[in-house]
Amino acid sequence: MIVLKIGGDIYKEGLSESLIDDVKEAFLHGGIIIVHGGGDEVTEIAERLGKKQVFVTSPSGIRSRYTDKETVEIYTMVMAGRINKLIVQQLISHGLPAVGLSGVDGSILRASRKKRLLIIDERGRKRIIEGGYTGKIDEVNTEVLRILLENGYLPVIAPIALGKENELLNVDSDRVAASIAGALKAERLIFLTDVKGVMIDGKYVESIPLREAERLISTIGSGMDKKLLASTEALKNGVKKVVITSGFIESPIKKAINQTSGTVITVG
Image (cartoon, rainbow, N blue to C red):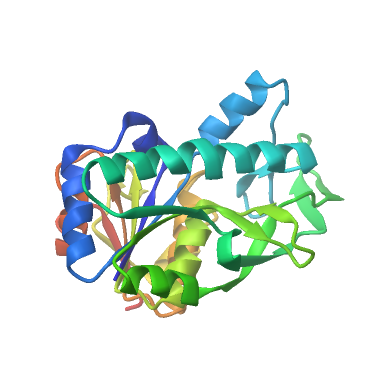
C-alpha cells in the first residue's frame, strides 16, 4: 500500500503520462491512495474573489494560512471542488477508477479545532490570536478507505476535516497524507514536489534517519519543514519508509520505491 501526496505544482502542470503510468502500476500491485494539495490556487482564487489571504508563522518557524470562516468556505470550494475533481477527471480519462473525496465525506478525517494560535508577529514578538478554522487531525476513518480499496477504487482525498462540532476545518495536506499512511500502516508515503529531495548544506541528500529529520524541521526552510514534520509523524505511526522526491521526473513513483531518486527517510 502506497499513500501518494501530490503537491499543487504537480497538479497545476497536469499529471504526466509517466506519473499516471506509475499510479496504474501501484494501483494494480498493492493499492494506492492519493492526497493532494493546492494552496497556491486557493490563494489565487480567494484573492480574485476579493478575500485577501493572511499567513502566520509559528514559534517553530512553520508558516500556515490563517483560516477564518470565509476563507474555509473558499478553501473547501477550491480543494474539494475544482482541484479534486480535475485530478479525478485526469485519472478516470486514463482508465483508473478514481473516487474524489474530502476528509469530510464519511468522516474520513476528524480534527480538533485550534482555538488559539501562538504566532510570531512582524516585529518578531510572540502573540496569541484566535485560532479560526484550522485543525489538527485526531482520527482517520480507515473503514471508508478500506471499503473503496477492497472494491477496486482509487481514493483521491482533499485536505479538509470535520471538527468536534462538525465544522469544516483546513488541515495541512502533508500531515493529512502522513495521518492516512500511519492509520493504514502503509509500506510507503511518497511526497511528490517540485524539487529533487531534501537539500542540506547546498546538496540533495539520499537518506535521512528519523532523528536527523526531527532536528532539521526548525532549520530546513518553509515548505520542506512541513514535509519533514509529516514524515516523522508517519514513521512514528508505523509507515516503513517516506520518500520526498520530484514529481517532474520520469517514473517518479517507481524511482521512489526503488530508492533511485529523492530523499528516503527511515526510522533507523
